[in-house]
Image (cartoon, rainbow, N blue to C red; front, side, top):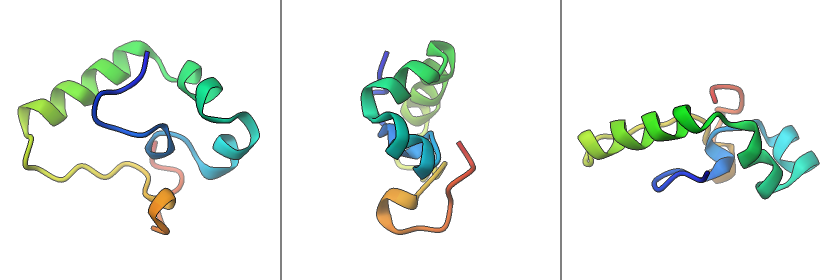
Length: 64
């Protein structure tokens, strides 16, 4: 299952993403977690939710 609102890079550290790739990383994340973060985003569509932001050169890498 993939998130409707988040990239996998927001949920895993850069090291894991580079080692496994996008498709395998999605398999690491429990479907219930994906459902929950999507529901939170849908409940607060204008709100900002940052988990990991390394993909955009941010400093958050281990929050996911």
